[in-house]
Length: 69
Image 1 (cartoon, rainbow, N blue to C red):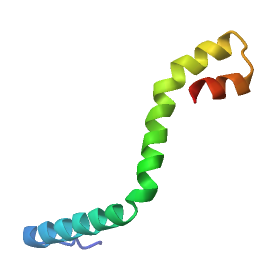
Image 2: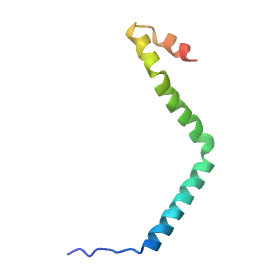
Image 3: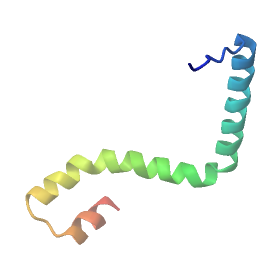
Image 4: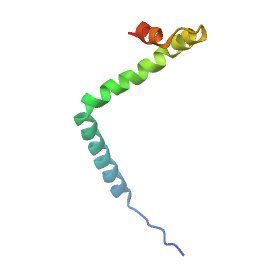
């Protein structure tokens, strides 16, 4: 039979705090990489209806791309 591992609430708290600090430090160091990707992700969803409209009327793909720029 498997034995349940019981952990102390204090251990859970400190492991959570340490994990959040590590994640925050990694994101801070890599912010120059993540910020452009996040902006591109939001812009993709922002322009999706416009792209769908242009694709519906069979505009060439290069015109759709240049219209976004």
